[in-house]
Length: 409
Image 1 (cartoon, rainbow, N blue to C red):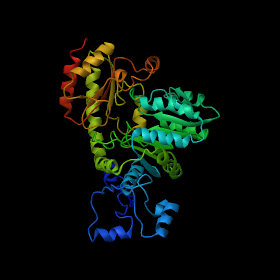
Image 2: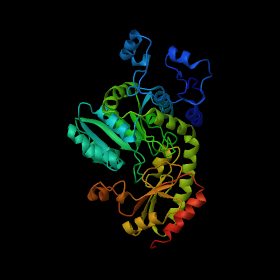
Image 3: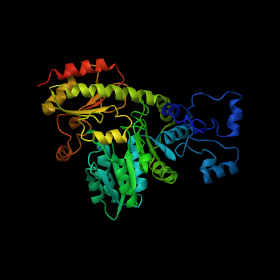
Image 4: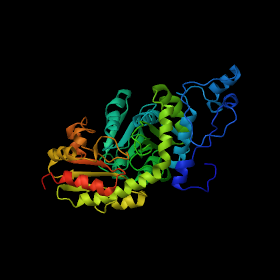
């Protein structure tokens, strides 16, 4: 968006980034004829781009900002999406990837190009944990997992070779919060790159770059696209970091978003502020209901006063999100029985969909995490995670209640 006086989140979600010329070369513009500019950004569903002559082509190879060459290197549809993401997250620029894990691995490989050590939150998305604990060790990269809800533990884990502090807030699936500003101050003091996965919160809830974070990650599969039809990821940060990621790990490891998925995400983002507000409103109602049900041992939702970090949530988040985690009193048997009894709510492992999704982490998302590690970090057998959707909240509550009423009290 050229005009900085328009800063409403919905206005940004609809209009930001869509000033990119529709046709990258004059030749293509001539071929298209005299038409109006498409209101909806088009899909540039092509693998490669042609040039008028060798000089023009050579220039594009030397200066990639002068033209598009090959979609693995960049694409107009992808670039519109990236411009929109940068505005929403208050970053200098952004990079779209083929998946959330494509974004996470690209960011980590970029920050750790010469090896080094990572300090990471102990409760992470399971695939991120596996990447840090298993795959990156093959490159000589070591990770120390700590309870990052205590910034002192983050600082105590720093070594001379620490290159990255890696965070989630809220965490998956326990919805713990990290004091982002405190952790970024530690990172800056030690000249360490700070990275956070902001998928659960979205830029409608918090903008970590304004709190000092260097790099923000998203699985755009979730809230940003919101339609359950896309697998995509994003990296937002300073231009120098994004350029290294784009020309290095993303391009060479190949986690490149397809133009079609970039376009589908562009269809979803304009409604993000409206959708996310409804997710949050529904979640607050349902969390309050769950907290009072006799089959529930406890509820974690950042918007509840019972959340251990409620004061931090109020200080750090504009909205409290659409994710709820509960512990059922009868353990694994209750968790499995509960999800099997649901009717409207869908048993699925993703989140941020228009539909309410429910999963049992011990048997699904965290089943590959060693039991002792899972139990130590609080992911117990009776844990159930909700991604609250956009259905009428009364109907969601009726469905959850009838399933809970089949359990021991």
